[in-house]
Amino acid sequence: LDDAQKAERGIALASSVVAYKDLMMTYSCAAKIVRTKFEILDEEFRMRRLRNPIHSIDTRLKSTASIMDKLRAKGLEPTEENIIEHVRDVAGVRVVCSYVDDIYMLAEAVGRLSGIEVLETKDYISHPKPSGYRSLHLVLDVPVSFSDYEQKVKVEVQIRTIAMDFWASLEHQLQYKRGLADEDGLVAELARCASDIARTDESMMEIRRRIEAEADMDGLDVLAEHVR
Ligand code: 0O2
Image (cartoon, rainbow, N blue to C red; front, top):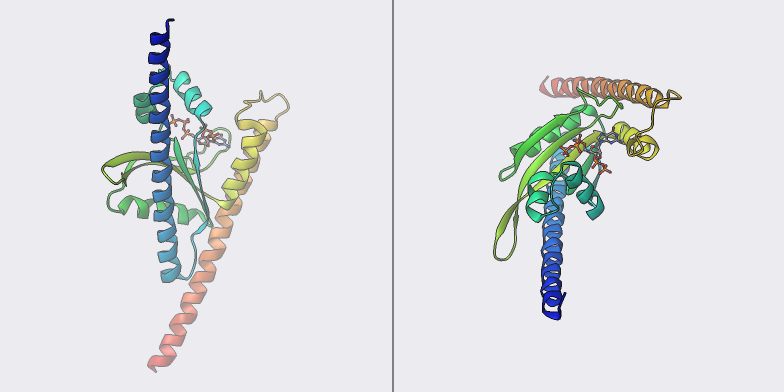
């Protein structure tokens, strides 16, 4: 390469680095917006029902290596267009809830918010993965406003209970990315743990509902006393 060609390549590389950083900044802003939307829903629910449906929220940007792996697995070139079109989880928001019914309530509520469009829903709670993985995944299209333009950005939201999150975090370290052969029955054992956890989640929700129903009855008694 002569000097002029080297300079030309250098400029092309530098401008693609700037464009990539700009794209990641956009994803980071979109994740922040989605986080805030869920925080507001949590606040509203706490006021109206005296209970927080959300235990915690985490946001993350997919690493460059992971983005490249995903594009390679799909047989796609590492271009900005392909990232935007084919990698739907560059911006990720994980919402950890107390109870299973909170998950569906929040998914419905976020889908009703103006400006937000739900592009895709994957229900791994009613249809768990063979691994035992449970979670509700949404891909949202979110408008992000900057000083001189607005852009729609995709954000993947994973909504799960504390119990589902506990299992997924440990299974992620132990097995998910390793893809162990099930020689010792460990993969089956992990799936069994996931089923146990799902049963416990159901029981906890049922207990909460019964306590709430009793509290409602007490409230009605107090009201009836007042009216008398
Ligand atoms: P990481 O390291 O968590 O980021 P698509 O995104 O539609 O092209 P994909 O990737 O199969 O296809 O999407 P899917 O099935 O909705 O799952 C994506 C994410 O769900 C994964 O992200 C994990 O975070 C989580 N997940 C899915 N299956 C399992 C599982 O069996 N165990 C655990 N622990 N997590 C799971 P990444 O990018 O694969 O990994």
